[in-house]
Length: 460
Ligand code: UDP
Figure (cartoon, rainbow, N blue to C red):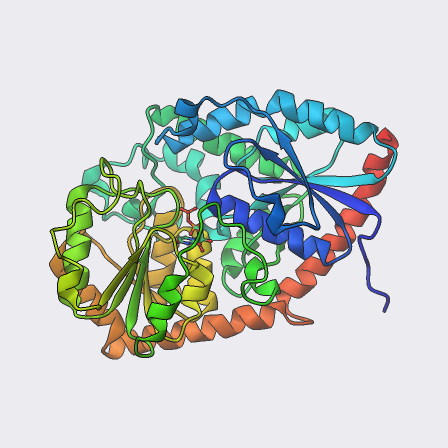
């Protein structure tokens, strides 16, 4: 059978300008480029990606005018709302130019799902919009249920009800529901409703996930949505390891040489992603928990991770020296490479979706410390459904940290978790092979994009 190809068709892709969203969107661009499509990345000036990492793409900046203080807001929901508003006008101007060009047919616009304001902009140009959801399908089902959960009294979340089951969404408990620190809690509900509705209004949703991992959530979404959904992940495994990088920060590769000196499956890799922050007290509990566990550790302490500190100032003096080389700290790691390293035995993570998926793909058991948004749902599934990790249940405490590290690194439960994660790793691999679920879903996506073209060509 002749393969369908996107040759001669241009796709416009737009990321939400945060690390955990830019990486999967550029990976999606790579995947669609490999199917013959030409790729244009329309991006904000804030956190703009480095065009030199993808010389085969066209990069078009728009100027959304965020002030420095707005861009450095720690209220990420407020920032997302601002971005959604500020991109509207410059995006219209950008699309106006592109759609007038007679040189190439623009087949469709693919936006990060969080950029919900792009739907009405695309509608104005009769340009079909597909959506990339960079989080998991399971957490999306939870987001889509928030109006109902609110009606049923789960929100605002009450401390006294944390251990109660959410009967509408088993096996979640109240403590697993999405939560976000923001100046205006009402803005969170409004955002969620808009984000879900504009996904439904799109021509289809692409997921960085695979059928075998999230089959029941994907089945629910198929009932809920009248548009196609395409689980074609894990995106980063469509290509050989390290083929492209889209890191906003420069990874410190010296940690790989340090990992080379460690025993197989011995190192705890610790990272809470690109946005989460912790208090000084939490930082110190982590430090002592890691030190007391007696396992070697590689720890990403991003500048800005510790609220009120530049970097490592809260560490007691000679803390690292006293460990005799058993610990290594970097500001940013080449995470995919780290997780693939034979020395790594566990990943202590905040369960951002990318980190969760990357850990599964390398068969690395997780220790879960979810912070906000979808992370609590991801952590619940990691620990209780897929059983590929253990959750740190209470507030960060050095003794509990030490105990949990031991549980995962040694002992029967740790072995069972390792077997489960290796099983999922294999399933992820198979899903991408010819005939696999993600492979077939991608074929469907390419075919559908080419058919979308006919409905947009009339505007040329
Ligand atoms: N990451 C990295 N180096 C680090 C920490 C994180 O390359 O030191 C990458 C990680 O591989 C992942 C992304 O940053 O792809 C974080 O995304 P995730 O969804 O896990 O969390 P977020 O940063 O969005 O909270």
